[in-house]
Image (cartoon, rainbow over all chains, first blue to last red; front, side):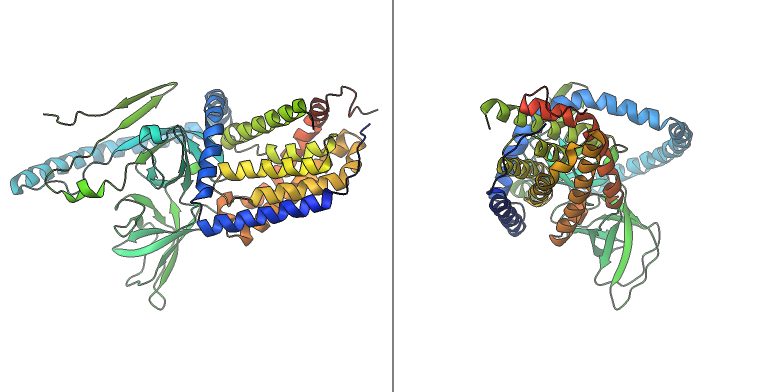
Length: 305
Length: 167
């Protein structure tokens, strides 16, 4: 049988904690997650991330097995469909390789150089998930900094680095971000914002000149401060025509964050000083690949060739 | 609260946080809220009520700090749920089923509060998609886990093998 003393301090303590909680919420909203709040988040993550990494090492095989068992039937059908897609993709790849060869030849003839240097990439494993955000096993030691864009292995936009410690980082997907995403659809610039209780996002084009059609690709715009231009984000779900110069449509992102296991963190924006130097772009590329429990980091020599 | 009890509570909290963010972050079919459940189950122990509120607040704050939701959101919700738990814990002493239903009911209150306060602070999208199904699944999962683990947690924290034994 339980024995307890009733406390007259219960209600005052409850009210005090509620007030403190609401104050914290207000401060966090005002600071937009930066400042002291950012330091607190990084500190907590630094403590918990190593434990998450160890737990993920044990949990991931179990979770994979659980997923496999629950998806055996659909996996077989998916396998057949993927084989067909692979054949189509290989055919397209051959065509693209031909086009690239022609492009390289033309660039050589006209003395052109690629406008954007290849971005540094850090490949990271997902080790934890809290609400919509997820934690990866790469941090400042691997060159990851707050605000860097994150894509999946297919190059589709995933989200942005919110907090980072020496060995881990928290990533907020675009479907849960506090700010919208500046995108390009058929040469029209719009804003993509998350919606409640759905993975679909809302596209708003303020100065719409033409309609958008179901299946139109949505890519990041050069006007975006958070992402490099041209990264695929999603696809328009239904036709929409301009009304009073503005247009609204639903967009399904390509990435499903629930099934993400590996992500790629881009070293973007590149250093403004080196980026401004057209003739000598020197971007250090650090690629970290992880397989099982081993991690390899490679950096090309600075004066190669 | 003695030093050893503090250690046990901190260890339980860390285990709950790590398991919640790794195992249950991967498996989508089973979605309990272990940290909230721990805050609820601690209401059944002999820890002083105001300390239980402080633990619930801290637990929520830790989850807030690890996630992307606004800081303090879960802290407020967990504290409120713990307060309700402390006020109603006598009803959970009847038996295992009563404990499970009590924990499930409090979890339901917690999930609904999380949605409501989250919406007020513009954080609904941070809770992810399928929010409505979570209102049903999370309390159900917590109900089942509470039925299995409630006596164990109480005995572990109170260090009393005779505690919470049903006739």
